[in-house]
Picture 1: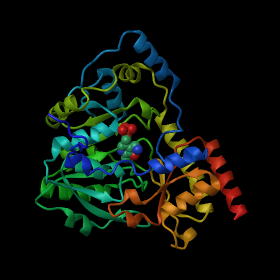
Picture 2: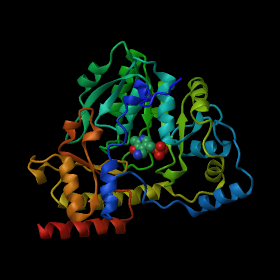
Picture 3: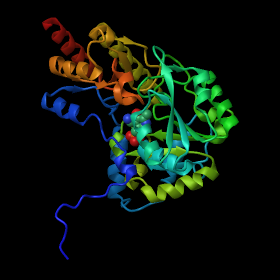
Picture 4: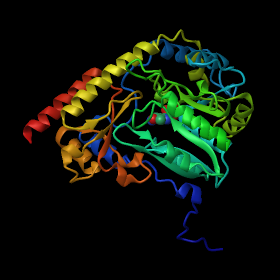
Length: 391
Ligand code: PMP
């Protein structure tokens, strides 16, 4: 039988619907120009603790190189439990995942069926839309309103329907830096109870909350706690984003199902790296790291508001979400602005579009990561000043 010369691979509609990384082209340009990257949340600050790195080496040398418990190293689960604001049973309520990225997909695949609706805030973390699509679910976006990125309770209530299966939150938030306060969480709780839906909350930035503000986990809020799944990560708090360690927190019944899905997606994160964080007397002082991160936020605010951007200070997380319209007069979109900054100052930031359900809503916004070494931020300031003095 003759083989077809022009075979077209069949791609599932699930995969074909995914947009892929919208920033690839910008990264290539940035690399060519030796630009300073303030695009991704890849930690440049804090530094990973040297004792975890030693412990990883020792774990590998000591023979911890094979499959281990798919739900995660028990010592690591205990250590994670110690960092949580309310008690969680490491054996029945915590599952170690390959980053929050896996945790998010596992949570959605465990909770929603194709055609179910998932309520989420807009703008939000870019991967939420894609993960909802992968699960075959339908997003119901609730707009957050500038300048302080809060939702209108009536608009939130209107997003719930009999098809709503889950609410997907992120606090502290990417890209807005918002930390959902107790009143907002109580409003969510009332609706989640009324419609009997699950709440999934990405709390990967929970250790980075500024100005003595309280970070409230959904697990502290009656109405959310008993129907909640927390997605967590060690990527940012321990500055080990390449180790790919995250976790899921949920009640024992949901956890059993989450673990079945997790056994299929990855069957566990890297053993020696889990052992390392579990064993090491980790010196990462999370409180000091949060204060230090707050200082970097202040420095980034000073640099970019100094340039003329309008910014509501991030309450937590590692991003500023900035309005550049005072600089562009609304004449160009934020992608053109980002390319110009790359060209003139050698600094890479991200256009706002991909964070919105309707990318045109992001035309006047850019996202700036500030989890970087202070010296690097000062170099950014110097480059921007130099570029502007030439203009
Ligand atoms: N959630 C949010 C809100 C994020 O910003 C990121 C990283 N950019 C992640 C999850 C991914 O975390 P991880 O490295 O643990 O997969």
